[in-house]
Image (cartoon, rainbow, N blue to C red; front, side, top):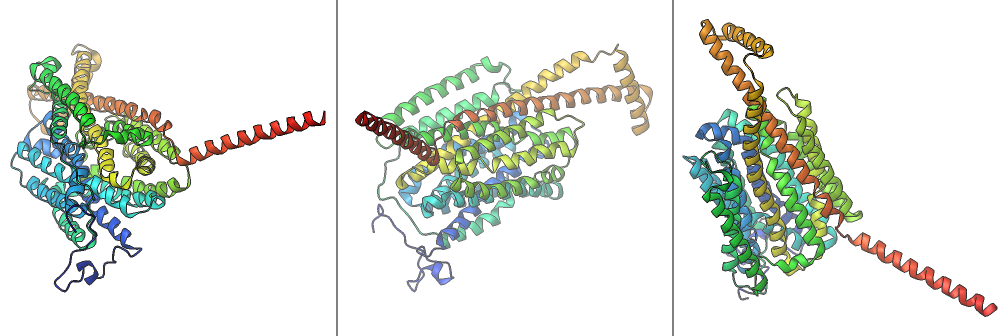
Length: 564
Protein backbone atom coordinates (compact mmCIF):
# COMPACT_ATOMS: atom_id res chain seq x y z
CA UNK A 1 0.00 0.00 0.00
CA UNK A 2 1.31 3.44 -0.78
CA UNK A 3 1.55 6.27 1.66
CA UNK A 4 -1.73 7.83 0.61
CA UNK A 5 -3.92 4.80 1.14
CA UNK A 6 -5.80 3.71 4.19
CA UNK A 7 -3.62 1.45 6.28
CA UNK A 8 -4.90 -0.69 9.13
CA UNK A 9 -1.83 -2.83 9.85
CA UNK A 10 -0.55 -3.46 13.35
CA UNK A 11 3.14 -3.43 14.23
CA UNK A 12 4.57 -6.75 13.15
CA UNK A 13 7.20 -8.85 14.94
CA UNK A 14 9.79 -11.04 13.27
CA UNK A 15 7.42 -14.02 12.83
CA UNK A 16 4.93 -11.99 10.84
CA UNK A 17 2.44 -11.86 13.70
CA UNK A 18 1.17 -8.57 14.99
CA UNK A 19 2.85 -7.53 18.21
CA UNK A 20 -0.56 -6.74 19.70
CA UNK A 21 -1.83 -10.25 18.96
CA UNK A 22 1.32 -11.75 20.42
CA UNK A 23 0.61 -10.26 23.85
CA UNK A 24 -3.14 -10.83 23.80
CA UNK A 25 -4.48 -7.45 22.69
CA UNK A 26 -7.66 -7.92 20.61
CA UNK A 27 -7.46 -7.48 16.84
CA UNK A 28 -9.04 -4.32 15.40
CA UNK A 29 -11.94 -6.36 14.06
CA UNK A 30 -12.75 -7.72 17.49
CA UNK A 31 -15.75 -5.96 19.15
CA UNK A 32 -13.65 -5.01 22.19
CA UNK A 33 -10.86 -3.34 20.15
CA UNK A 34 -12.47 0.08 20.23
CA UNK A 35 -12.57 -0.03 24.04
CA UNK A 36 -8.83 -0.79 24.18
CA UNK A 37 -8.26 2.23 21.95
CA UNK A 38 -10.45 4.36 24.20
CA UNK A 39 -8.41 3.37 27.28
CA UNK A 40 -5.20 4.13 25.37
CA UNK A 41 -6.42 7.62 24.40
CA UNK A 42 -7.58 8.25 27.95
CA UNK A 43 -3.96 7.85 29.10
CA UNK A 44 -2.87 10.78 26.93
CA UNK A 45 -5.85 12.87 27.96
CA UNK A 46 -5.14 12.18 31.62
CA UNK A 47 -1.54 13.33 31.25
CA UNK A 48 -2.34 16.57 29.40
CA UNK A 49 -5.13 17.69 31.74
CA UNK A 50 -3.16 16.54 34.81
CA UNK A 51 -0.36 18.89 33.84
CA UNK A 52 -2.72 21.86 33.44
CA UNK A 53 -4.40 21.31 36.81
CA UNK A 54 -1.09 20.78 38.62
CA UNK A 55 0.32 24.01 37.21
CA UNK A 56 -2.63 26.01 38.56
CA UNK A 57 -1.94 25.00 42.15
CA UNK A 58 1.82 25.51 41.73
CA UNK A 59 1.58 29.11 40.55
CA UNK A 60 2.19 30.77 43.96
CA UNK A 61 5.25 28.54 44.55
CA UNK A 62 6.68 29.31 41.12
CA UNK A 63 6.13 33.03 41.72
CA UNK A 64 8.03 32.80 45.02
CA UNK A 65 10.80 30.57 43.63
CA UNK A 66 11.68 32.82 40.70
CA UNK A 67 10.70 36.08 42.40
CA UNK A 68 8.18 37.14 39.73
CA UNK A 69 4.72 38.72 39.82
CA UNK A 70 1.43 37.48 38.40
CA UNK A 71 2.19 39.44 35.20
CA UNK A 72 5.13 37.15 34.43
CA UNK A 73 3.99 33.92 36.11
CA UNK A 74 0.75 33.75 34.14
CA UNK A 75 2.83 33.15 31.01
CA UNK A 76 3.59 29.69 32.37
CA UNK A 77 -0.08 28.95 31.62
CA UNK A 78 -0.55 31.36 28.71
CA UNK A 79 2.45 30.09 26.71
CA UNK A 80 1.21 26.52 27.04
CA UNK A 81 -2.31 27.44 25.94
CA UNK A 82 -0.95 29.54 23.07
CA UNK A 83 1.14 26.64 21.75
CA UNK A 84 -1.91 24.39 22.09
CA UNK A 85 -4.04 26.84 20.14
CA UNK A 86 -1.51 27.21 17.31
CA UNK A 87 -0.91 23.47 16.96
CA UNK A 88 -4.51 22.29 17.22
CA UNK A 89 -5.52 23.28 13.66
CA UNK A 90 -2.44 21.56 12.22
CA UNK A 91 -3.33 18.28 13.92
CA UNK A 92 -5.78 17.32 11.17
CA UNK A 93 -3.26 17.80 8.36
CA UNK A 94 -0.45 16.06 10.27
CA UNK A 95 -2.67 13.08 11.16
CA UNK A 96 -3.99 12.76 7.60
CA UNK A 97 -0.49 13.05 6.12
CA UNK A 98 1.57 10.86 8.45
CA UNK A 99 -1.06 8.64 10.04
CA UNK A 100 -3.07 8.89 13.23
CA UNK A 101 -1.06 6.34 15.20
CA UNK A 102 2.31 7.92 14.32
CA UNK A 103 0.98 11.39 15.10
CA UNK A 104 -0.43 10.33 18.45
CA UNK A 105 2.78 8.54 19.48
CA UNK A 106 4.91 11.53 18.38
CA UNK A 107 2.69 13.92 20.34
CA UNK A 108 3.09 11.78 23.45
CA UNK A 109 6.87 11.83 22.97
CA UNK A 110 6.99 15.63 22.60
CA UNK A 111 4.81 16.16 25.66
CA UNK A 112 6.86 13.76 27.78
CA UNK A 113 10.15 15.34 26.68
CA UNK A 114 8.74 18.81 27.35
CA UNK A 115 7.72 17.74 30.86
CA UNK A 116 11.24 16.48 31.60
CA UNK A 117 12.79 19.72 30.35
CA UNK A 118 10.34 21.81 32.41
CA UNK A 119 11.53 20.04 35.55
CA UNK A 120 15.12 20.98 34.65
CA UNK A 121 14.32 24.67 34.06
CA UNK A 122 16.84 27.09 35.60
CA UNK A 123 14.81 30.29 35.11
CA UNK A 124 11.27 31.47 34.49
CA UNK A 125 12.19 32.16 30.85
CA UNK A 126 13.39 28.58 30.34
CA UNK A 127 10.27 27.22 32.03
CA UNK A 128 8.01 29.24 29.73
CA UNK A 129 9.99 28.09 26.67
CA UNK A 130 9.71 24.41 27.62
CA UNK A 131 6.02 24.87 28.35
CA UNK A 132 5.69 25.81 24.69
CA UNK A 133 7.18 22.41 23.77
CA UNK A 134 4.66 20.75 26.06
CA UNK A 135 1.89 22.73 24.38
CA UNK A 136 3.00 21.54 20.94
CA UNK A 137 2.63 17.93 22.07
CA UNK A 138 -0.63 18.60 23.88
CA UNK A 139 -2.01 20.46 20.85
CA UNK A 140 -1.65 17.29 18.81
CA UNK A 141 -2.74 14.86 21.52
CA UNK A 142 -6.23 16.12 22.31
CA UNK A 143 -7.81 16.47 18.83
CA UNK A 144 -6.09 13.43 17.33
CA UNK A 145 -7.14 11.35 20.33
CA UNK A 146 -10.75 12.52 19.98
CA UNK A 147 -10.69 11.82 16.23
CA UNK A 148 -9.38 8.30 16.85
CA UNK A 149 -12.16 7.60 19.36
CA UNK A 150 -14.85 9.10 17.11
CA UNK A 151 -13.60 7.02 14.16
CA UNK A 152 -13.65 3.72 16.02
CA UNK A 153 -17.10 4.12 17.60
CA UNK A 154 -20.37 4.13 15.62
CA UNK A 155 -22.48 7.33 15.79
CA UNK A 156 -25.01 5.83 18.20
CA UNK A 157 -22.23 4.96 20.69
CA UNK A 158 -20.14 8.11 20.41
CA UNK A 159 -21.94 9.90 23.23
CA UNK A 160 -21.12 7.05 25.61
CA UNK A 161 -17.51 6.89 24.36
CA UNK A 162 -16.96 10.60 24.85
CA UNK A 163 -18.51 10.32 28.30
CA UNK A 164 -15.96 7.69 29.32
CA UNK A 165 -13.21 9.67 27.60
CA UNK A 166 -14.11 12.59 29.84
CA UNK A 167 -13.47 10.36 32.87
CA UNK A 168 -9.73 10.68 32.21
CA UNK A 169 -10.07 14.45 32.14
CA UNK A 170 -12.15 14.40 35.32
CA UNK A 171 -9.70 12.13 37.14
CA UNK A 172 -6.76 14.39 36.30
CA UNK A 173 -8.75 17.48 37.31
CA UNK A 174 -9.42 15.84 40.64
CA UNK A 175 -6.03 14.27 41.31
CA UNK A 176 -3.90 16.99 39.71
CA UNK A 177 -4.22 19.74 42.35
CA UNK A 178 -4.04 17.25 45.25
CA UNK A 179 -1.06 15.39 43.83
CA UNK A 180 0.62 18.64 42.81
CA UNK A 181 0.11 20.15 46.25
CA UNK A 182 1.58 17.07 47.93
CA UNK A 183 4.62 17.06 45.64
CA UNK A 184 5.24 20.79 46.11
CA UNK A 185 4.94 20.66 49.91
CA UNK A 186 7.09 17.53 50.31
CA UNK A 187 9.57 17.73 47.44
CA UNK A 188 9.92 20.67 45.03
CA UNK A 189 8.04 22.30 42.19
CA UNK A 190 10.16 20.33 39.69
CA UNK A 191 8.41 17.11 40.69
CA UNK A 192 5.05 18.28 39.27
CA UNK A 193 6.59 17.89 35.80
CA UNK A 194 8.56 14.73 36.61
CA UNK A 195 5.30 12.91 37.33
CA UNK A 196 4.38 13.10 33.63
CA UNK A 197 7.45 11.18 32.49
CA UNK A 198 6.51 7.62 33.61
CA UNK A 199 2.89 8.13 32.56
CA UNK A 200 4.07 9.32 29.14
CA UNK A 201 6.37 6.33 28.65
CA UNK A 202 3.54 3.90 29.46
CA UNK A 203 1.19 5.76 27.09
CA UNK A 204 3.75 5.69 24.24
CA UNK A 205 4.24 1.94 24.64
CA UNK A 206 0.48 1.33 24.79
CA UNK A 207 -0.05 3.35 21.62
CA UNK A 208 2.59 1.38 19.68
CA UNK A 209 1.10 -1.92 20.85
CA UNK A 210 -2.64 -1.32 20.71
CA UNK A 211 -3.56 1.04 17.91
CA UNK A 212 -3.81 0.25 14.21
CA UNK A 213 -2.54 2.79 11.74
CA UNK A 214 -4.94 4.87 9.72
CA UNK A 215 -4.06 7.34 6.97
CA UNK A 216 -6.40 9.39 4.88
CA UNK A 217 -6.69 8.33 1.25
CA UNK A 218 -6.29 11.96 0.25
CA UNK A 219 -3.30 14.06 1.21
CA UNK A 220 -3.46 17.84 1.32
CA UNK A 221 -0.71 20.37 0.87
CA UNK A 222 0.25 22.24 4.03
CA UNK A 223 -1.21 25.72 4.30
CA UNK A 224 1.96 27.54 5.38
CA UNK A 225 0.51 31.01 4.81
CA UNK A 226 -2.50 30.18 6.96
CA UNK A 227 -0.29 28.78 9.72
CA UNK A 228 1.99 31.85 9.82
CA UNK A 229 -0.89 34.35 9.73
CA UNK A 230 -2.75 32.46 12.48
CA UNK A 231 0.35 32.30 14.68
CA UNK A 232 0.96 36.03 14.14
CA UNK A 233 -2.65 36.88 14.98
CA UNK A 234 -2.87 34.80 18.16
CA UNK A 235 0.61 35.54 19.52
CA UNK A 236 0.48 39.31 19.13
CA UNK A 237 -3.08 39.56 20.43
CA UNK A 238 -2.21 37.56 23.57
CA UNK A 239 0.91 39.67 24.09
CA UNK A 240 -1.20 42.82 23.96
CA UNK A 241 -3.90 41.46 26.28
CA UNK A 242 -1.38 40.07 28.78
CA UNK A 243 1.04 42.99 28.98
CA UNK A 244 -1.30 45.96 28.63
CA UNK A 245 -0.92 46.78 32.32
CA UNK A 246 2.26 44.86 33.12
CA UNK A 247 4.65 46.42 35.61
CA UNK A 248 7.35 46.95 32.97
CA UNK A 249 4.91 48.60 30.54
CA UNK A 250 4.85 52.16 31.85
CA UNK A 251 2.88 53.39 28.83
CA UNK A 252 -0.11 51.15 29.56
CA UNK A 253 -2.59 50.27 26.83
CA UNK A 254 -1.46 53.20 24.65
CA UNK A 255 2.24 52.32 24.67
CA UNK A 256 3.89 51.83 21.25
CA UNK A 257 4.51 48.14 22.01
CA UNK A 258 0.87 47.36 22.84
CA UNK A 259 -0.49 49.38 19.90
CA UNK A 260 1.98 47.63 17.57
CA UNK A 261 0.84 44.23 18.87
CA UNK A 262 -2.81 45.10 18.25
CA UNK A 263 -1.98 46.34 14.74
CA UNK A 264 0.00 43.19 13.88
CA UNK A 265 -2.80 41.07 15.32
CA UNK A 266 -5.35 42.79 13.10
CA UNK A 267 -3.12 42.31 10.05
CA UNK A 268 -2.64 38.64 10.92
CA UNK A 269 -6.37 38.12 11.42
CA UNK A 270 -7.32 39.72 8.09
CA UNK A 271 -4.59 37.76 6.30
CA UNK A 272 -5.69 34.51 7.96
CA UNK A 273 -9.34 34.88 6.97
CA UNK A 274 -8.39 35.92 3.44
CA UNK A 275 -6.00 33.00 3.00
CA UNK A 276 -8.35 30.38 4.46
CA UNK A 277 -11.30 31.48 2.31
CA UNK A 278 -9.26 31.48 -0.89
CA UNK A 279 -7.04 28.45 -0.40
CA UNK A 280 -8.04 25.18 -1.97
CA UNK A 281 -6.77 23.18 1.01
CA UNK A 282 -6.92 25.51 4.04
CA UNK A 283 -5.30 24.84 7.41
CA UNK A 284 -8.62 25.56 9.13
CA UNK A 285 -11.57 24.28 7.15
CA UNK A 286 -13.96 27.19 7.64
CA UNK A 287 -16.53 25.34 5.51
CA UNK A 288 -17.21 23.23 8.61
CA UNK A 289 -18.84 26.31 10.07
CA UNK A 290 -21.63 25.87 7.51
CA UNK A 291 -22.80 23.11 9.82
CA UNK A 292 -25.00 25.17 12.14
CA UNK A 293 -24.58 22.95 15.19
CA UNK A 294 -20.81 22.80 14.75
CA UNK A 295 -20.61 26.60 14.53
CA UNK A 296 -22.83 27.16 17.57
CA UNK A 297 -21.03 24.55 19.68
CA UNK A 298 -17.68 26.16 18.86
CA UNK A 299 -19.03 29.55 19.88
CA UNK A 300 -20.15 28.03 23.18
CA UNK A 301 -16.73 26.49 23.76
CA UNK A 302 -14.91 29.74 22.95
CA UNK A 303 -17.01 31.71 25.45
CA UNK A 304 -16.81 28.86 27.96
CA UNK A 305 -13.00 28.75 27.61
CA UNK A 306 -12.74 32.46 28.35
CA UNK A 307 -14.86 32.24 31.48
CA UNK A 308 -13.95 28.83 32.89
CA UNK A 309 -10.32 28.20 31.92
CA UNK A 310 -9.47 31.86 32.26
CA UNK A 311 -10.38 31.71 35.96
CA UNK A 312 -8.91 28.32 36.92
CA UNK A 313 -5.75 29.83 38.41
CA UNK A 314 -7.72 32.25 40.61
CA UNK A 315 -9.01 29.83 43.24
CA UNK A 316 -5.62 28.22 44.10
CA UNK A 317 -4.09 31.71 44.16
CA UNK A 318 -6.83 32.93 46.53
CA UNK A 319 -6.54 29.90 48.82
CA UNK A 320 -2.75 30.11 49.15
CA UNK A 321 -2.09 33.84 49.04
CA UNK A 322 -5.38 34.98 50.57
CA UNK A 323 -6.25 32.37 53.19
CA UNK A 324 -2.74 31.04 53.80
CA UNK A 325 -3.42 27.43 52.74
CA UNK A 326 -0.47 25.21 51.84
CA UNK A 327 -0.28 23.84 48.30
CA UNK A 328 -1.52 20.43 49.47
CA UNK A 329 -4.37 21.92 51.52
CA UNK A 330 -5.48 23.99 48.53
CA UNK A 331 -5.13 21.08 46.11
CA UNK A 332 -7.03 18.61 48.29
CA UNK A 333 -10.15 20.79 48.09
CA UNK A 334 -10.37 19.94 44.38
CA UNK A 335 -10.50 16.19 45.01
CA UNK A 336 -14.33 15.92 44.78
CA UNK A 337 -14.31 17.94 41.53
CA UNK A 338 -12.96 15.16 39.36
CA UNK A 339 -15.21 12.57 40.98
CA UNK A 340 -18.31 14.63 40.26
CA UNK A 341 -17.19 15.48 36.73
CA UNK A 342 -16.21 11.86 36.08
CA UNK A 343 -19.57 10.61 37.36
CA UNK A 344 -21.58 13.16 35.41
CA UNK A 345 -19.61 12.66 32.16
CA UNK A 346 -20.75 9.07 31.40
CA UNK A 347 -24.23 9.90 32.70
CA UNK A 348 -24.41 12.87 30.34
CA UNK A 349 -23.17 10.64 27.51
CA UNK A 350 -25.87 8.07 28.23
CA UNK A 351 -28.57 10.73 28.48
CA UNK A 352 -27.31 12.39 25.27
CA UNK A 353 -28.18 9.20 23.41
CA UNK A 354 -31.67 9.16 24.98
CA UNK A 355 -32.69 12.80 25.47
CA UNK A 356 -32.22 16.14 23.78
CA UNK A 357 -28.50 16.98 24.36
CA UNK A 358 -29.19 20.71 24.07
CA UNK A 359 -31.00 20.85 27.40
CA UNK A 360 -28.26 18.85 29.11
CA UNK A 361 -25.67 21.37 27.89
CA UNK A 362 -27.92 24.23 28.99
CA UNK A 363 -28.13 22.75 32.47
CA UNK A 364 -24.34 22.42 32.62
CA UNK A 365 -23.73 26.02 31.53
CA UNK A 366 -26.18 27.48 34.08
CA UNK A 367 -24.79 25.41 36.97
CA UNK A 368 -21.21 26.32 36.03
CA UNK A 369 -22.08 30.04 35.87
CA UNK A 370 -23.66 29.76 39.33
CA UNK A 371 -20.49 28.07 40.58
CA UNK A 372 -18.34 30.99 39.43
CA UNK A 373 -20.82 33.55 40.74
CA UNK A 374 -20.78 31.96 44.21
CA UNK A 375 -17.05 32.78 44.38
CA UNK A 376 -17.91 36.46 44.08
CA UNK A 377 -18.69 36.45 47.81
CA UNK A 378 -15.33 35.08 49.00
CA UNK A 379 -13.45 37.07 51.65
CA UNK A 380 -10.44 36.83 53.96
CA UNK A 381 -12.74 35.13 56.47
CA UNK A 382 -14.40 32.57 54.18
CA UNK A 383 -14.49 29.03 55.54
CA UNK A 384 -13.81 25.83 53.69
CA UNK A 385 -17.47 24.95 53.14
CA UNK A 386 -18.00 28.25 51.28
CA UNK A 387 -15.30 27.28 48.79
CA UNK A 388 -16.51 23.68 48.50
CA UNK A 389 -20.01 24.73 47.41
CA UNK A 390 -18.59 26.35 44.28
CA UNK A 391 -16.36 23.32 43.60
CA UNK A 392 -19.33 20.93 43.90
CA UNK A 393 -21.38 23.05 41.50
CA UNK A 394 -18.47 23.26 39.08
CA UNK A 395 -18.13 19.47 38.96
CA UNK A 396 -21.85 18.98 38.40
CA UNK A 397 -21.89 21.60 35.65
CA UNK A 398 -18.76 20.68 33.69
CA UNK A 399 -19.77 17.03 33.49
CA UNK A 400 -22.87 18.03 31.52
CA UNK A 401 -21.21 20.41 29.04
CA UNK A 402 -18.57 18.62 26.95
CA UNK A 403 -20.33 15.35 26.16
CA UNK A 404 -23.65 16.80 24.88
CA UNK A 405 -21.83 19.52 22.90
CA UNK A 406 -19.51 16.96 21.31
CA UNK A 407 -22.47 14.77 20.36
CA UNK A 408 -24.32 17.69 18.77
CA UNK A 409 -21.38 19.29 16.99
CA UNK A 410 -19.59 16.24 15.54
CA UNK A 411 -22.56 13.98 14.79
CA UNK A 412 -22.98 15.24 11.20
CA UNK A 413 -19.29 15.68 10.36
CA UNK A 414 -18.05 13.29 7.61
CA UNK A 415 -15.51 10.72 8.80
CA UNK A 416 -12.81 12.02 6.45
CA UNK A 417 -13.13 15.49 8.04
CA UNK A 418 -13.26 14.27 11.63
CA UNK A 419 -9.63 15.13 12.46
CA UNK A 420 -9.96 18.67 11.09
CA UNK A 421 -13.30 19.12 12.84
CA UNK A 422 -12.05 17.89 16.21
CA UNK A 423 -8.95 20.07 15.79
CA UNK A 424 -11.06 23.16 15.17
CA UNK A 425 -13.46 22.08 17.93
CA UNK A 426 -10.61 22.05 20.44
CA UNK A 427 -8.72 25.06 19.12
CA UNK A 428 -11.49 27.53 19.83
CA UNK A 429 -11.83 26.27 23.40
CA UNK A 430 -8.08 26.60 23.94
CA UNK A 431 -7.97 30.01 22.25
CA UNK A 432 -10.81 31.11 24.50
CA UNK A 433 -8.91 29.73 27.51
CA UNK A 434 -5.67 31.51 26.57
CA UNK A 435 -7.57 34.76 26.04
CA UNK A 436 -9.30 34.21 29.37
CA UNK A 437 -6.01 33.68 31.26
CA UNK A 438 -4.54 36.81 29.66
CA UNK A 439 -7.63 38.92 30.34
CA UNK A 440 -8.24 37.63 33.87
CA UNK A 441 -4.59 38.05 34.82
CA UNK A 442 -4.61 41.63 33.56
CA UNK A 443 -7.91 42.36 35.33
CA UNK A 444 -6.56 40.89 38.56
CA UNK A 445 -3.62 43.30 38.46
CA UNK A 446 -5.83 46.27 37.55
CA UNK A 447 -8.51 45.57 40.14
CA UNK A 448 -5.94 44.93 42.87
CA UNK A 449 -4.41 48.35 42.21
CA UNK A 450 -7.88 49.91 42.13
CA UNK A 451 -8.96 48.43 45.47
CA UNK A 452 -5.62 49.26 47.09
CA UNK A 453 -6.18 52.91 46.11
CA UNK A 454 -9.76 52.93 47.40
CA UNK A 455 -8.94 51.17 50.68
CA UNK A 456 -5.79 53.22 51.13
CA UNK A 457 -7.77 56.44 50.89
CA UNK A 458 -10.18 55.12 53.51
CA UNK A 459 -7.34 54.51 55.98
CA UNK A 460 -7.03 57.85 57.77
CA UNK A 461 -4.50 57.84 60.59
CA UNK A 462 -6.59 60.45 62.44
CA UNK A 463 -9.67 58.22 62.35
CA UNK A 464 -10.58 56.75 65.79
CA UNK A 465 -11.19 53.33 64.22
CA UNK A 466 -7.77 53.30 62.53
CA UNK A 467 -6.04 54.56 65.69
CA UNK A 468 -7.69 51.82 67.76
CA UNK A 469 -6.68 49.23 65.19
CA UNK A 470 -3.05 50.46 65.27
CA UNK A 471 -3.01 50.34 69.07
CA UNK A 472 -4.24 46.74 68.97
CA UNK A 473 -1.69 45.78 66.29
CA UNK A 474 1.12 47.48 68.25
CA UNK A 475 0.20 45.49 71.33
CA UNK A 476 0.09 42.28 69.30
CA UNK A 477 3.52 42.98 67.78
CA UNK A 478 5.06 43.64 71.20
CA UNK A 479 3.65 40.43 72.65
CA UNK A 480 4.51 38.31 69.59
CA UNK A 481 8.08 39.40 68.79
CA UNK A 482 8.99 42.01 71.40
CA UNK A 483 10.85 45.25 70.67
CA UNK A 484 10.58 48.83 71.84
CA UNK A 485 7.69 51.20 71.17
CA UNK A 486 9.09 52.62 67.91
CA UNK A 487 9.74 49.17 66.43
CA UNK A 488 6.29 47.93 67.48
CA UNK A 489 4.66 51.01 65.93
CA UNK A 490 6.45 50.37 62.63
CA UNK A 491 5.36 46.74 62.73
CA UNK A 492 1.77 47.76 63.45
CA UNK A 493 1.79 50.08 60.43
CA UNK A 494 3.24 47.31 58.27
CA UNK A 495 0.56 44.87 59.44
CA UNK A 496 -2.15 47.40 58.61
CA UNK A 497 -0.73 47.96 55.12
CA UNK A 498 -0.46 44.21 54.63
CA UNK A 499 -4.07 43.70 55.66
CA UNK A 500 -5.24 46.41 53.27
CA UNK A 501 -3.19 44.80 50.48
CA UNK A 502 -4.68 41.36 51.23
CA UNK A 503 -8.21 42.75 51.27
CA UNK A 504 -7.58 44.49 47.94
CA UNK A 505 -6.27 41.23 46.45
CA UNK A 506 -9.34 39.25 47.58
CA UNK A 507 -11.69 41.96 46.29
CA UNK A 508 -9.91 41.78 42.92
CA UNK A 509 -10.33 37.99 42.86
CA UNK A 510 -14.05 38.46 43.57
CA UNK A 511 -14.31 40.91 40.65
CA UNK A 512 -12.59 38.41 38.34
CA UNK A 513 -14.99 35.63 39.35
CA UNK A 514 -17.97 37.90 38.74
CA UNK A 515 -16.73 38.69 35.23
CA UNK A 516 -16.00 34.98 34.59
CA UNK A 517 -19.55 34.08 35.69
CA UNK A 518 -21.04 36.72 33.38
CA UNK A 519 -18.95 35.47 30.44
CA UNK A 520 -19.93 31.85 31.11
CA UNK A 521 -23.62 32.73 31.37
CA UNK A 522 -23.42 34.20 27.86
CA UNK A 523 -23.05 30.59 26.62
CA UNK A 524 -26.78 30.17 27.25
CA UNK A 525 -27.58 32.19 24.11
CA UNK A 526 -25.82 29.96 21.51
CA UNK A 527 -26.85 26.79 23.38
CA UNK A 528 -30.52 27.73 22.91
CA UNK A 529 -29.97 27.90 19.15
CA UNK A 530 -28.52 24.39 18.89
CA UNK A 531 -30.55 21.93 16.85
CA UNK A 532 -30.90 18.32 17.84
CA UNK A 533 -32.14 15.37 15.85
CA UNK A 534 -34.93 14.85 18.35
CA UNK A 535 -36.18 18.41 17.97
CA UNK A 536 -36.10 18.10 14.18
CA UNK A 537 -38.06 14.86 14.34
CA UNK A 538 -40.55 16.51 16.67
CA UNK A 539 -40.94 19.44 14.26
CA UNK A 540 -41.38 17.06 11.35
CA UNK A 541 -44.01 15.09 13.28
CA UNK A 542 -45.81 18.33 14.15
CA UNK A 543 -45.85 19.40 10.51
CA UNK A 544 -47.09 15.99 9.46
CA UNK A 545 -49.87 16.10 12.08
CA UNK A 546 -50.88 19.58 10.93
CA UNK A 547 -50.95 18.39 7.34
CA UNK A 548 -53.04 15.33 8.28
CA UNK A 549 -55.40 17.54 10.29
CA UNK A 550 -55.85 19.98 7.38
CA UNK A 551 -56.39 17.08 4.98
CA UNK A 552 -59.02 15.58 7.28
CA UNK A 553 -60.85 18.90 7.54
CA UNK A 554 -60.75 19.31 3.77
CA UNK A 555 -62.12 15.80 3.27
CA UNK A 556 -64.85 16.43 5.83
CA UNK A 557 -65.83 19.67 4.08
CA UNK A 558 -66.03 17.94 0.72
CA UNK A 559 -68.32 15.30 2.22
CA UNK A 560 -70.66 17.97 3.63
CA UNK A 561 -70.81 19.69 0.26
CA UNK A 562 -71.59 16.40 -1.43
CA UNK A 563 -74.43 15.70 1.04
CA UNK A 564 -75.89 19.14 0.41
